[in-house]
Every structure is written in C-alpha cells, then in structure tokens.
Length: 93
Image 1 (cartoon, one colour):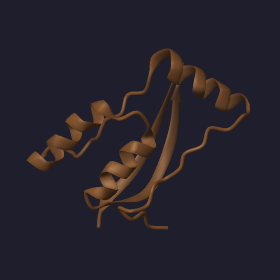
Image 2 (cartoon, helix red, strand yellow):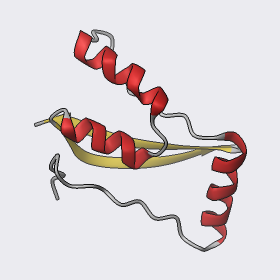
Image 3 (cartoon, rainbow, N blue to C red):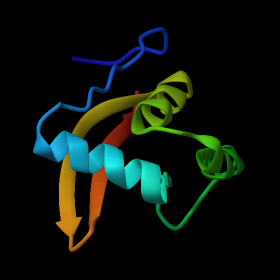
Image 4 (cartoon, one colour):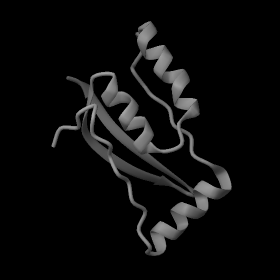
C-alpha cells in the first residue's frame, strides 16, 4: 500500500506486555527521531533533519516525509539491551 500525503498513518501500541513496556520507555526516556539521507545531504533534507527534533512519534515522521514526496517501503525493529530501534524505510516517489 502506498501512503499518500493526504493519508495519516495510525500507530497503535498493543495492550500486551510489549505495549506496556513501550509506553513506559517513551514516558521515561522519550523518543528520538532522526532521518538518514546518506553522505550527500541537499538543503531540503537538512531542513527535515532539523524538523525531526520536534516530532513526537514515528507516525509524525512518516507523515512529514510523505508530504515531501517520500513513500513508505518497509520497516524493521531491532533491540539492543534496553533500547528498541524502529527503522522505517522510505523512497522518493
């Protein structure tokens, strides 16, 4: 499914044990969102990198990128001790 700029992605956190832990981590330590565009970063992308500091959820990040002409192509979750990393892969339309 392609995400268009006028669509909002809805992220839900389950009520199970994993969902409770996720809510607790977000409350305690917050959420850090960053964009990685590789080594050659145009001015437009630099603005998005700065804007990432003001976002409050991964859904916000995906919606910002879709408005800039990006399309969701996949995701991945990795856990390292007490930190969970959520990777959302996007590509230019």
